[in-house]
Length: 171
Image (cartoon, rainbow, N blue to C red; front, side, top):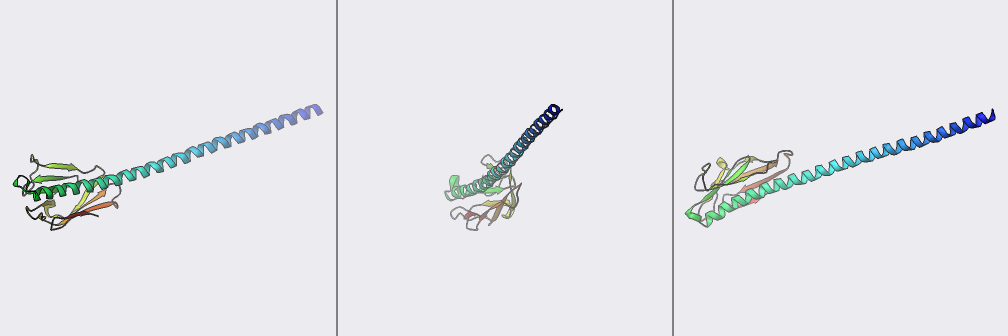
């Protein structure tokens, strides 16, 4: 009888040890699952941050490329290239440099810049959304601004201002 009770106790102790090992294994598995979850959340956060930086670069690029197009139109006008004046037409998805006193859709001399797909020109206060520069002075036909924003985050903006004298800057 004492043999049976010691054997039962040993089996109970073994079960407790086995149960303890199972508890430790279950805890280790749960900890690993939580660690993987935390890693995944950290990875998602890093991806969002990278995406936000990329979108900010696209917004900057849209404003900078459009500004370069405006400055090119003014410089070509001041240089009296082909005895012409040049201008820029603004649309929500693109800006087009053109030769002449007015914009003609599809003209052979037109040079279009497609605005980044995640960016839009959402406010154009330049009369008729077109600016033409005057020969000799470089004055603009109409002062105003072109505002760009991220489609996914409209609070993020860049604004190009064109003064009556033809000077341009970005905010």
